Image (cartoon, rainbow, N blue to C red; front, side):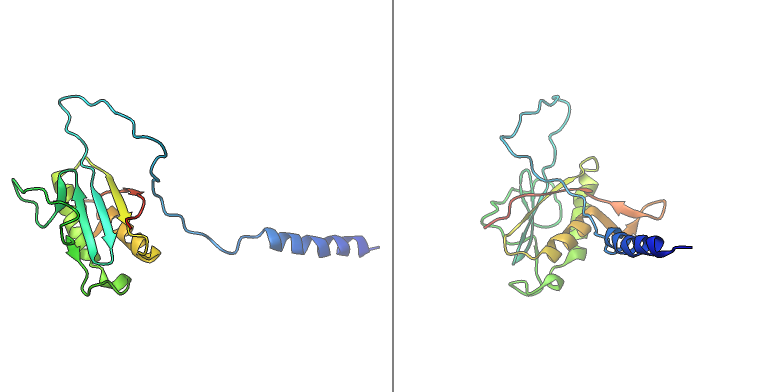
Length: 174
């Protein structure tokens, strides 16, 4: 019995199988990138109210929550005047300014504030993140996690409360 051809086949087959094996699993973060091109006009019925257009600016000073009528400065209150974003202090400042690392940001307070906004606009599901160019990737990912679901407040079925699951990352502020 001549086993040399079979041994040659196994010698070639083992490295080929090792090269095709997947040893590293990559994690994927679902997000929506902004569309390229001019914004398109969308006709809305007069009965429906316009979308919230919730944005979250991430700077080295903290988080600034922006809605369609200006900066959210604190607890939602009736008749609040809109504030100019360039003049407003961060809605959720860092513990130490400028923020030293990812641990300096207050993710629990961010989730609580976004939860209050979700209570007022339960139908909206989009949030736009506007990070500065020098904000670390870890901070962006942890901010996305904090704005997608509230793990502290469980739903009726025991799962985390969904806040704004569709995250769009916009071009960073300078």
